Length: 403
Ligand code: NDP
Image 1 (cartoon, rainbow, N blue to C red):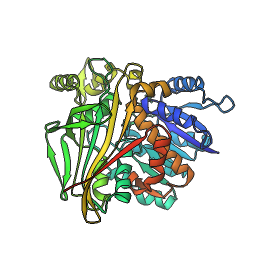
Image 2: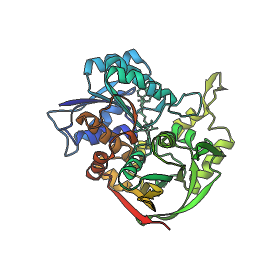
Image 3: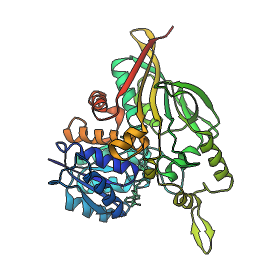
Image 4: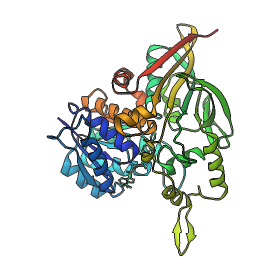
């Protein structure tokens, strides 16, 4: 019976806790920890009311500041988990990895490290732990959400089964859901706004090229009744690992849809300085405008009952198989209202939390245990793809020959 410690009790942490609780044969003992213990208890109370709750094996709640490594080490030593699932914020990644190293416990996250005082995410800080994790005989699985996460696995699956080489990759992320609010972010507002206001970047023939934030767009016809939507080129972290790990890749880009209301509000917030991440003096104290804005915006976990509509996230790939050019599009469609019915969440947290549970399951099963620090595409994609169909994120693939 395996034990798992989930750190972070936000929108994604809630989904991970629900999905792990649904699989007691894998996750025998679950602890949910966050700085605010009440957040964990509220999620555990929701789970206790579900048909999959096990009264004889209740989930546990704990309070921990994951930036305080000795405190986290004490919690890990007292609970002795087989795996720590980090669904707190990217700022905590290195601290949680340090604690896992000290305790000799496997690690999984859904977003790469970002220094709090600079809106920049890069794998270099976490890849620097490769040797340490390998020597300790433990595995760190990076980016086991949807994008990064399932998108990396879609590429690995296509590379294994449908291509000799993938030449072009477009990851296209559409949230066609509507929560009816003028402005809200569907995952942590601070991380979301830092990501969206960054310069666009893509990989082309061995170099990184850039654009101003949200300066390039294209129209894409989404399946599942969603229809045509405008998508904006952005930089996203999986491009960094995929450009290294996918054989023959010549171009890799990432696109995301935004509603006009979201973009208009964001522009105004930027223009008035509320998205700044440098501290400013206010009423005798220093505040970071973006952190203040986060305090005003709706908690992403509260959007669950309000959001209707679907998401569609997928990988559009072009390349060659047996000398013939082909296109392959692999995608998942997820319905916000169905996610709410199942685990009391909207689809963005759901599409992140389910792959985190699946990655954790494969690590605990031993199928994805490979000491070192790993990106998702380095693992065998087949069991992950099978589990996506089994556990709530069914995918579709479309393959066409190209002239
Ligand atoms: P939330 O803001 O809803 O939740 C974050 C949680 O982390 C909160 O419960 C917070 O609670 C806890 N937390 C923050 N700091 C600490 C700390 N020092 N120690 C312990 N707990 C802490 O965010 P989301 O749930 O929306 O996102 C979670 C993660 O998922 C983020 O890293 C995000 O980037 C990632 N993500 C990944 C996606 C993917 O597809 N790969 C998509 C969407 C999100 P408290 O304040 O009580 O500590």
